[in-house]
Length: 68
Image (cartoon, rainbow, N blue to C red; front, side, top):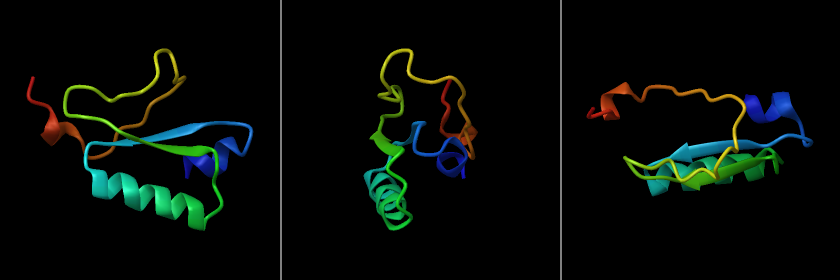
């Protein structure tokens, strides 16, 4: 949804900590021709996003992963 909103002039990072989910997101982005969506494989303590790379973030269904 966000990749469609920003269009090809924008950038959307889809970050996950599970490789199979990252792979699935990348496949869906390719099928929908959304080159502005870049998948990122993070870890439970590091999202692995480039420094100062986001203007807004959206997190969905993640609180159960937070340990602190």
